[in-house]
Image (cartoon, rainbow, N blue to C red; front, side, top):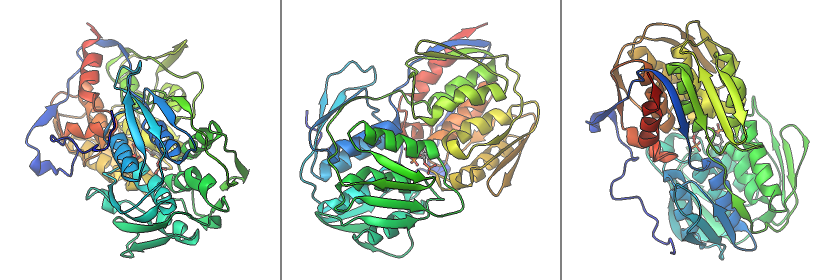
Length: 452
Ligand SMILES: O=C(O)C1=C[C@@H](OP(=O)(O)O)[C@@H](O)[C@H](O)C1
Ligand SMILES: C=C(OP(=O)(O)O)C(=O)O
């Protein structure tokens, strides 16, 4: 089947909802005994969207096996189809939807791309549009217009692209593609997001002169995601040289078509695995890859800091907890994506925690530092915002409303707290569809796997 009209579903569980607009809150289920659950998760968002982009830029067709099907990946598919690719759904072995065959086509603009709230779409596709012929306008949700884009805009300009924007360094803007981009040597500030680097690296082999990219800025967050970008390029025959930390060189080259198995999303495993600490008992995630560039793999080292035991048998990773949680002192700069889960855990711990190195998550789906502090404190918590993190002091929490700010990880963090605290009512739980449309069903499976 050709997916040429990949549009938002009629029921849009993810759009720009405010707490006031959403009457129906999801009562987070409470765990009534220690857990004994085994959960299979759909594919990684970060891998699926990288492989979709590389497939579109490749010389030959690609097959993505067991890809994620969620709002962020649907938006990526829709955008690539608009830019001239063919994407076919084909039967596969994946439990969570069809495989995707991607046939690259001549890249064309004259279109408006809906980025939704997906950082991967808004940061990975402007370089692709610059390689297409014609104007491509990028826009997205109200929340997307607040996410930083100035590095994408200024870096593409420095590489030879013609871009119209309103000077705010944000969506919307228009890339006037000419079918080719000179590329070359530039220095950027990627302090606000690693995705500025990844977006340029993914398209770099197709720039006339390739790319010599340097990062200069106060910090470079989410380094594993850049490693992931480099690894996905390597599998398609492109070597990224990194002569120094924060410096990358990509020669012009041909991105190969590929047959790729997408790993389960290990960042989405975070709330499920953390549930073992919150309720006690054990939670197993199946399909855990032997090696991976996903930062979610760090959970195997991070959760023991909170008091968990982690074991591994083949492709099954199991976390066991007693229900008692220790506070942590943690620099999470490499895995900011895991912060909402770990902060929720810390809010249920017996001792104080400080989680730092995550100032940049103020620019994620929402200002996650402010959102986590506000929502946990509303339930009686004592969370203090730091410039680049949160201090979390233990307090008994009580039930009440939990707002999600259109942020899938705020929703799952609320569910985790609700596993222990009765009466947590989550607004717009449907926002989990950004990367895990099956969240409520899978969470129910987890909670039902209880040994009383
Ligand atoms: O490249 C990617 O797939 C991602 C990079 C990270 O972004 P930041 O560097 O902005 O944190 C991560 O948090 C995001 O969820 C996904
Ligand atoms: C920051 C995230 O998403 P995005 O890819 O939209 O940046 C996330 O999923 O935690």
